[in-house]
Structures are given as C-alpha cells and as structure tokens.
Image 1: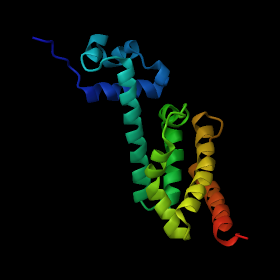
Image 2: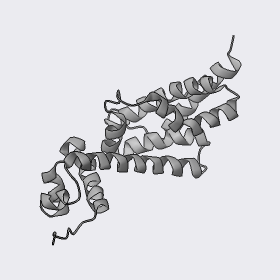
Image 3: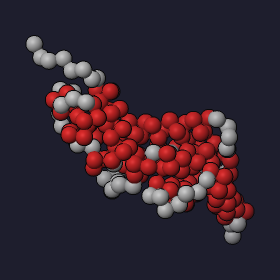
Image 4: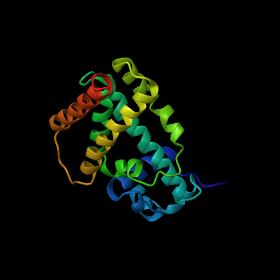
Length: 188
C-alpha cells in the first residue's frame, strides 16, 4: 500500500507560493519547500514529478492571483474600467513583488504574441468602444499605455520607486489623456 501524503497538491502549491514570495522563484527548491511544509521532500515528490513541475504550478497560481487583482479592481468602480486594469497591475507589483517579477520580469521570448492579443481582447473592446478606434489603433494605444504602466510597476517591484496610489493614478490619467488626444483629436 502506497504511503498517504499529508498535504494535497493545492496545499503544496500554496506553500510553494509563500516560498516564492519570500525568496523568488530561484529560491523555490525541494529543500526550501520541504522546510516550509515541515516535512521531507518525499511529501513533495509524492504529488509532483520534480521541482520544475512545482515551479510551473506556482507560476499558474501567481497568474491566477494577478487576474484576481485585475478582476476586483475592474469591478469595484473606484476607477474607470480600463484604468482599473492598469492600477491593478501596479498594485500587484507593489504587494506581490516576487510574483510580479516571476510573471512579468522574465524572458518571455517563447510566448505566442497572438495569444496575448486574445488575452487583452476585453481591454481592446473597452478602448474601441470608449474612443471609437479601430482594433489595430486600440491595440497600439494599449501597448503604448501598457509600456508606461509596466515601467511604473517594474520600478515599484524593484524598489526604485515608492509612489502612492494617488500619484500613480494621476500619472496613468496623464498618459491616457495624451494618448487619447493623439488618437482622437490630434490626427493630421
């Protein structure tokens, strides 16, 4: 009879997420995770093939957490919906620095860029509706806005900046207004 493991896969992933928050993904090893669980690495490898599989699941869990930040911000009505998505990105970077680094400050060259367009489709729809832009213009508008948002978030995640929510909100509004002018009124 195989031994019973005292942790579920979900519990192991949650503990692995905690290790990643504290030490980054490079600090997530079988040894550090076993210590977090208060058990041996046999517990881990009864549920996962190797530590790389655990790391892959941590990345999925971190992304799900980010999407929760985004969904909540977009639903709570504090900011216009499009702006709320950017504010959520920056808040995630501030509150979950290592998870932000794991997801958004890594080599992403192997990702399919077309999949990304479909992922941001709801944001493109908002821009097209609010500003009357074509999909292609909405995409470029979003990329330009996102570059700015990502820059702020990256500087916050690396402790280069420590801007408060009010200042970030103002900065995002300024860029949005500039882009809006460029794409709607400033056309030649």
